[in-house]
Image 1 (cartoon, rainbow, N blue to C red):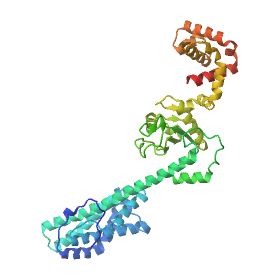
Image 2 (cartoon, rainbow, N blue to C red):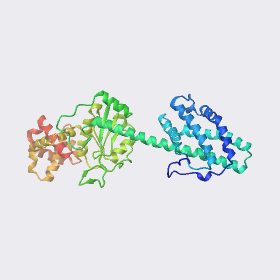
Image 3 (cartoon, rainbow, N blue to C red):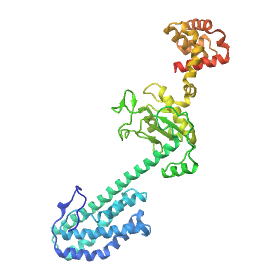
Length: 422
């Protein structure tokens, strides 16, 4: 007894009926030359198979055609049943072979259809020689094309499985490449104060990029994403979410991603082009992405570190771009020093009420950031009446005096205010 096919696989057994024993005998005789005719027609009519059938490629096609023909006759003789489990690997190999050749399944499915037509032309002549009844000929046609459907389904399933396996392998290789490029900043938290590990050698990096099918770009930009909220986030601290929670996030193919970790991030090659991609822009909106500065490839870890610093201080739920906020990033690099500078330079505001302090702090920052700091400029920038702007300027002059004309003091005042009002 032959082994059955895969358990649970859909069957087409209803199409099979009992045929005269002599039919199988005559079909086997026909198969002696039929395989060569089918292969000839496939090579002639389907461009993807027109090359010489040599090596593994040729052996797979030859074996596939001969196995399919032999199994069909066995099934006719035995009255049906599922595909032979020992022959299934032949059809699956054809599906995997198409993927390894870099083709879709269109050519293989066309070959199956063509092979079925060629075989049927020969088989119907056998049926007529044996004077089979019309109903029996119709049943033979149905069983022949049912057989083709089943073996094609086995090839399609194998192709899909190989495709999924390849995608998983490629994904793992790309994640490893991302780790090489941004480590140790792939993990959340501030950068370690200890010396970094030795940089990855050019040879190792180039090989990892080849394995990941990722052309090494000259420049990159890292993106820090907000973790997706859910039951795996406790007290505002994200922990590792379930595998696959981020599958809905669509990204351009060459963007490297770590989406399943507690501190999700992206690495965008050729940012000038890809940061304008609608898919990526939508992802940044959906996940409130903070984009680090565009840097040479070897500084990818720095770009991610800066992106994470920006993400931590940007308004919740809003995307942010570090290239537009480099000064803010500089201030975020040493918060205690900025607080010390603010305490010293902004001490004159301590005598005011909170409302007055906030109003004059905004006015002082606007005064420092406008070309001349005049009342009309402040009025336009702050959307207030010019007389109100003059009154506030006089108040600032009384509080800060000569500091407003000292370049060093002005720089420290603006830095302290930007850190407090960003």
